[in-house]
Image 1 (cartoon, rainbow, N blue to C red):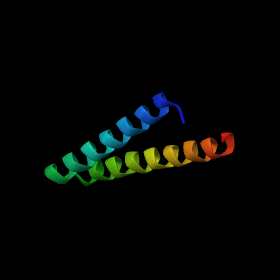
Image 2 (cartoon, one colour):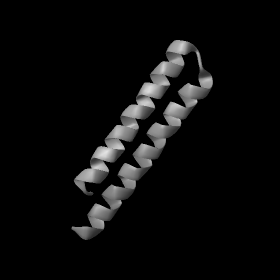
Image 3 (cartoon, one colour):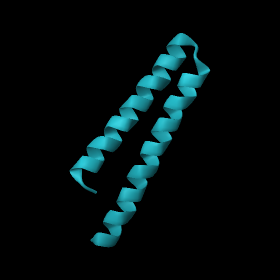
Image 4 (spheres, one colour):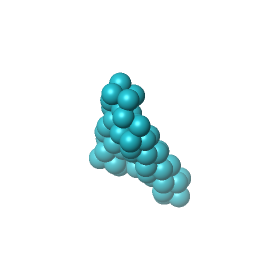
Length: 57
């Protein structure tokens, strides 16, 4: 997993957490769900990168 990929995934995860927190604070269920979705996508990307790394090494 390249450093760029790690940073991008971490940034996506943070954005998702921020959206989720904002959604909770403003009682916006749509924004909250979008934030959770962004975090899930980030987690899937990280898992895929780990699988690729396992096959490289």
